[in-house]
Length: 325
Image 1: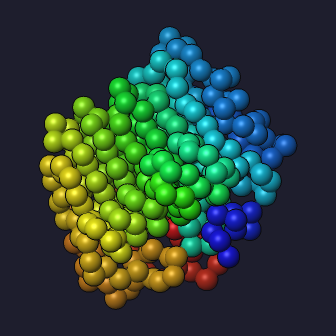
Image 2: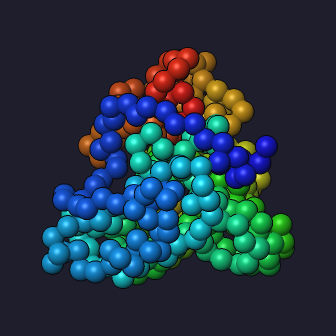
């Protein structure tokens, strides 16, 4: 079954206690919900307009939690822009607890915008904006343009994307799709980029510092590509496998404890590390001064390479680790 079309076939799992230090939240904030009719909003853009403003003088951040309610909420694009924020008061779009996107089973909340037009459908142009634990894909693309699914606008900084999966962004026309295109400065932690047309993670001339920590890119032409030598582009503990051109290309200042071959995963669409893996397990750089959790919210100790910190075989029932990505 096509993964994008399978998003409705979700199963909800109980959240675990999570370290979550990578998922930075505003110091104080208002929370709204996105999903079916029982939720506060059914449209991200409606929430965006309702919460746009000067969050610094207002004294509160804004958070929208997404619920996989089995309706068509996922089939939408959005544009985030216009609020005045700082490092402690900002906006966040995230999966609700227990609704984090599960790549292996297409469970949880993923945006899957259906259009043949040339668009950058998930468009972020606001300082310090956070995207956490969501899936992003596209359906029906057929055009001659190079575009990106998740597009971060130039001239902004403090972007943060954590625990997200960007997958199957494929253009049936002569153009191509990147999973993520970064034009401002941002940090990407514990993300998974799978089977996107051209590049999993692509940085244009951002004029800032771009950090990619413990991410995995699978398939496509490139795993990670950084264009501008004037930026600071650093990848640590990242995996790139199955690409046709290069795992890391362009102007990376550092690719520390990264690997482009040999990592053994559980298999199929499950990119947890296999018990027998010897390339990623225990071979990463300790980044505990920056964050201490993995894509599942498990606390890191051995510092494996990639989004998953190996925890042993998942339990037969219950718990987000069963099939998170």
